[in-house]
Structure formats: C-alpha cells, structure tokens
Length: 191
Image (cartoon, rainbow, N blue to C red):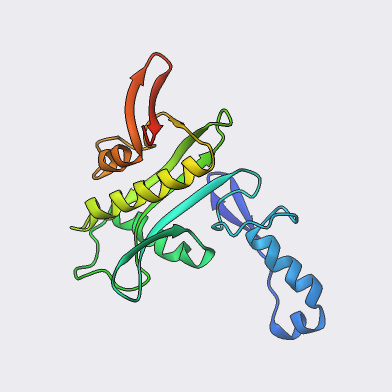
C-alpha cells in the first residue's frame, strides 16, 4: 500500500501478521529490514529517516536510569524521544524533571562533507529546560572527541538553525574555535 505523505510524497507500507511471518521468515525479515534500511548491504544502526547511503552520525543526550545525562550515538529505539524533543522546540515541554530515557539534546553530523577532513552540522536541538547548557556542553565534548579521532578538523558553516538558538553557541565553543573566514563560517574542531 502507498500512503500519501503530503508534499507529493508517498510512503510504502507492508502489512503481515505473525502467522504469515512464521511461514515466510526470510521474506518477513527482509521486509522489516527494508523498513529501516533501503540499502540491503547497510549495517548501520541509524534512525529511520537517516539515509543509508551517507555517512551521518546522530548523537543523543539521554537521561539514564541513574538520573544522569549520557551522550551516545543514537539508536533506532531513540526515535520517538527524538521526535518529542523536536516537538518541544515549538511547544512547551510537560512540567517536571526529565525521566529515564528522555532525550534532552541531539546533534546530527554528516562526515567528510565536502572534503575528507570536514563535516557539516545538519541538525541541532537542545531541550528548553534548565539542563540545556549542561547538555550542550556534554554533546560538544563527545562530538569533538569522536571527530578528532576520525581526523575531522573543521566544520562547514554554523548550526543549521540560527546560531543564537538557545545553547547553540555553547555547543560550538565546546566543539572548537569559531571563525568567520573568506571561505565562510566554520568551527576548527578542538582549536
């Protein structure tokens, strides 16, 4: 079935039950794999809407069972909480302290764009709570460490949203040294 997704796009849906899946396990596994990865050779554990073919990394700052915020690469099971965070960028977040599993911040990076030692920041969202500054710093430190290990030394441009977006400037400062050059705005990683 094809479902109209708006803006002239359609989503392809497959429906089957456990009986059919039990009788056709290889085909069922293939269809489930296709739902997450259009590329059959993709072994990435990326989020649903992240293309298989490019080299994007998404990090999330998640509240752990211990109540502390931990930064790690996003997993598919984080998707609903990432969508909550995006929604709360426009709406008011429900009152109260963050709960275990809640995503307080996310950043997506496309590596080696447009050159091997460069990355592009393709998304950045931080919670609008009192935790925002700390979350921004945690994300910046983890991303800086991973980018340096990968040999990435600079970004192209600033954050995809306005750089004055709450806590964005702190993230960029922790990530590296910001500069406005003749070749455009960039952050020198760890610089």
